[in-house]
Length: 350
Image (cartoon, rainbow, N blue to C red):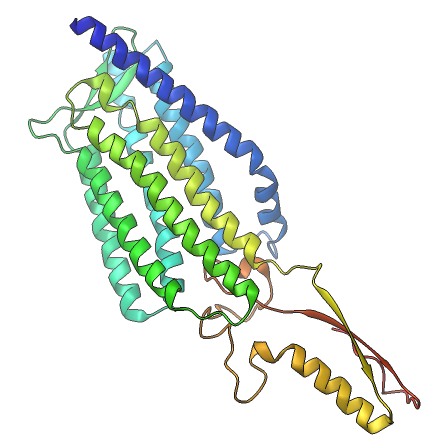
């Protein structure tokens, strides 16, 4: 009976790992075009945006942790000595992956909260506490175990199991980030449809990230409450894949939503009966198209209060850098009929 349960847990872990590798590999392939767009949009190799740096880190640290974890499980040549030198590699890179993912959430939340200094300090303290707990609980009382098929896996062997606290800390951090960001997003009153769409995407991304990742963390939390070495790490690889996919999706969605839409071109025809009044109508027509950008005296800008800029490089899609800054512009082509023309009185095009 006991051997049957051992075989069942070993088979389940294999299925979990194969499924996670397949999902991660598929997502890697379909996001290659998005990765290429990230690289192409950078001003130069020496001026890479924060969003691009985080995208590279979460993508390739996740690849590394998947390789390390699954090689240790599927390889069949480990001895107790070689396993002793290898068994902490996957847990260490797991915490690094979690740190990068939490940086993405933290910077995203800080910018959604309009870069409030007090919120920034609170989020930084929460981050430091969270990663400290994660490092301690993930490595404490871990021992190398070489099972009968000679694969190497780290096992929580303490009298009081503590590895599950890693997943509890991660879930609490995610919950705080979701609460803070969603609260601020619900307070926004977007003055343009594009900003409104971005707010909805940010809300859905945050909720989706929390639900999917919390479900995976909850599964691992339950599994690490057991003492069986095969069962403890059954869902670990799935957790790596989900953290990787959900974190990079946040970056991809923000970047794509912040790109200007070249298809939005409106033609405005302004008829001018005379030279002076025609010029005035042209200026009035252009100004009315962009009053939503805050150019009028009594109007509020939908960009500055809601999504403050981060640098002087305005208009570049990757300058968002998780700052959620959107350049809301409408390309307007102005044609007008005129009776009298002069060299400086030309149709204006934006």
